[in-house]
Image (cartoon, rainbow, N blue to C red; front, side):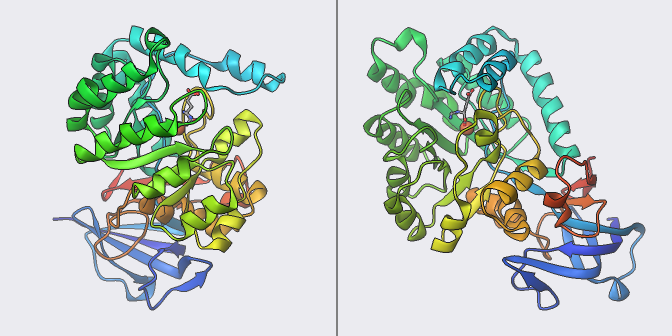
Length: 393
Ligand code: NIG
Ligand code: FE
């Protein structure tokens, strides 16, 4: 079995609170002049480069910064069609509504499996080039039993983190009887999709699903062994956060319009608040106040929500830069949220940190420190990406 040593690391971000050699900035943990030994897809050793063990393969990174690969815990990457005209109209003043989802549903239903797979593979390459090593992918642009099943199956071919989102919106053919659509989603659609998925999600929002419908949908998923995630408080305040916490959700996502009670409830729970800076950027909605959440003790993750409607970015560095500039996060908090925070939102402890035994998922930044992720917005600093110990970009 080959051992590969990455050395010449000017700054290593470990996120490992147990590492005695690391120093801390907020929740980040840092090691200077470091090396990492990779064996069998996992981190076998890390520490000061001067103490590094021998290895068959040695890569000198020449002073680069190494961080855990980004964990992008929210995306909608199996779709067809283009909504750039909707974005252009929005930038001329039209508001974002959930209605645009239906146009992607029509294009996705009309696409073949091989078209959807090819586009998805392109997105995965795009993510890896930007340092992302784990991505959660939701269905939700099929909205029929056969189409949702093929979307979750296609998603499952590229990630273990698949979310069934049959309850994205009510499709046109059920507009007159939304509860009949909830019956479909909780019955035959869930039966078809649950074997391919780890999670269930619901868009709990005016214009999508009510709190009562969302509870029914999520409870049906739990009964099938799926974990809970919720889209809530994106377009206005609502009861989605309370619902998510009451069901023990791993994450409640968007959180653009939170009440004081929502924040107190989140702070007293194990539910992560996943913020999606690309959405507010691309819809011109107000940014959520991450500072308020963190100060209250809420665990915050950052994700791209890459989708053709509300946020068509796959760049975690971009989202970090926006979170720092406009949501009150420090550069260290934003990086933690984009790595360890994403791992927490997926209830994973094998990713989001560089520690002995963790997956060797790493991104190499051509920069002297992690701060450059926010300091140099829009600059492609990611030079290489390792996933499970293999260089993928
Ligand atoms: O996370 N909020 C609901 N779903 C997506 C948007 C999907 C779309 O507009 O196509 C989101 O923002
Ligand atoms: Fe989403």
